[in-house]
Structure formats: C-alpha cells, structure tokens
Amino acid sequence: MGTPLAIEVTDLDLAYAAGIFDGEGCVGLYTNGLIRHANRSITRPFNLEVDVANTSLFLMEWLYDRFGGTIQTGSNPAEREHFHYLTCYHWCIRSRQADTFLRLLLPFLKVKHLQVETALRFYGEKEAFERRVRGKNRGLRVAPEELERRSILSQRLRLLKKDVS
Image (cartoon, rainbow, N blue to C red; front, side, top):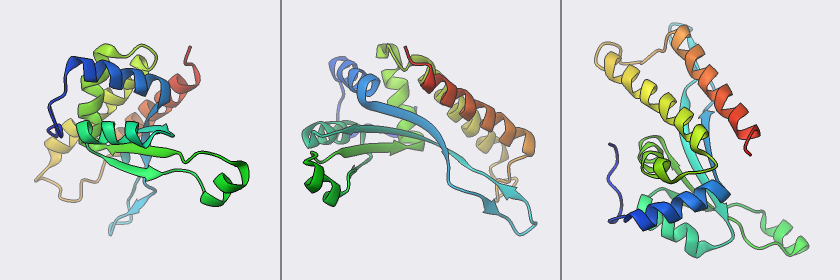
C-alpha cells in the first residue's frame, strides 16, 4: 500500500488523526512549475500533498512520529512578535506517504471524504500510468490527454474544497 508507517498505528490513532485532518488539514494536487524537455515539450507535474497546520508542536510531532513527513514553522517571526501570534507549525507529507496516510484515514473521515477520494483517484491513476511507461520512456513525458485528465481532477478537488459543508 505504500510507505511503511513510522510506528504501529491503532484504529484509535487513525480516528484521532482523521479528526485532526478533517478540522485542521488540507489535501491538494499541486504543480511544481513547468518542466521543459530537450525535445521542446513541456510538462506540468502534479504531486499529491497533505498539510496540517496547528500551533501545537506536540500535535505535529505526534503526526510525524506515526506517519513521517516534515514539520515546518509557518508564520513570520516578526509578524508573531508584532501581533502576538503563536507560532504555527505545518506537518506535511507528499506522494506515496500522503497516499498511504489518506487511504488509512478514509474510513474515518467525515468532512473531507470526497476531497480525499478525488485525491486518491488522481494518485492511483498517476501511479498506474508511471508503472505502464517505466522502462519504455525514461523521461516520463506525459501525453497531453493525461495532463488534461490530471488537471481536471485537480480542478475538481479545488471545487470540492470550496464546497465543504
């Protein structure tokens, strides 16, 4: 199913993580800009990413210990001092780790269930495509139809994020 988890995770852990993710998390299909190839073709790679933001470093470390990823400080120190903001932390996972995390949480999600289903569909199709072409085309230049399909799923996810009720 993907990357092994950092430690054994119980159903109670998954339910708790789902609640955190439903309330404080975000799932996205993001591009890392354009890649220009030697044959003058251009591709726009999409990546699956999960982010949870919170002012509790303990919570971010709890997620990190169970699911891996990275923790970053999210707010500007000068802004925090001026406005007396607490430090905001971001826990982030990408690609296969994000896929594993979302598949584990899916049965427990209430708010972001459709968003996660869309993101998982995208990632599953992307992985299947890459498995099909691996070894045949080292550059993995994606056909325009495939890019269009990925773009449509990315747009659908964006719309689902706006319609959370």
